Image (cartoon, rainbow, N blue to C red; front, top):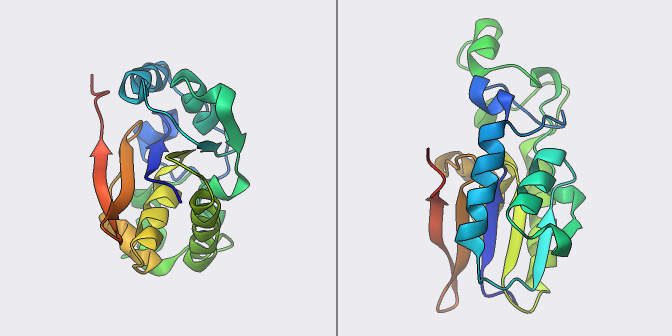
Amino acid sequence: MPSQLWLIRHGETEWTLSGAHTGSTDIPLTEAGRRQALKLKQSLAGRRFALVLASPLSRARETCNLAGLGGAAQIEPNLVEWRYGDYEGRTTAQIHADAPGWSLWRSGVPNGEQIAEVASRANCVIRRALRADGDVALFGHGHILRILAACWLELSPESGRLFALDPAAIGVLGYEHDVRVISRWNANDTCE
C-alpha cells in the first residue's frame, strides 16, 4: 500500500495561458512551463518513490523529466487528460457563447468523454498505485488529477470541481489513521 500519492500537474502551456480546454491535443510546455518543471525538482529532491507514472502526453512527460523522475517513469495511459470532444481547444467563454450556463462538471462535453469514464480511469490509476510499496508520483493534467483526488476521497467525480490545481503544482493524498485524506494541495513553489 502506498504511503502517499503525489499528484503533479504539468507545467504551463500556451493553452493553459489562454484557458483553452486541452485534452488529447499534445501541446508542449512554454519556456515558463519548463522553468516551473525544473523548480519541481527542488520540491521532489530526496523523496523516494516506489512508482512513478506519467501521462503519455508530452507536457506531462517533459514535466516528469525536468523534475528529475523521467528515468523511473512508466507511461500510464489512464492519466491522459479528459477528452473534451467538440470543446477541445475552446475556452469556457467561447463555449458559453454557444451554450450559456455550461459547466464541464455538470454538463459534460459533446462527442467527448463522460465524467464517469474519466473517473473509471482515475480509479484504475488508484488501484495500480495501491499495489506499490511506498510513495507514488503521478504526473498528469488538471482535470484528471482533480477527479482522481475526488475518487481517492470516495466523493463523486463531480466533486473534483472543488480542487483547483495550478500548473506545476503538487497535491498529496494520504491517510490519517485509516481514513483517506488530502495531506497537501495545490502546493506551488514555482511562482515567478
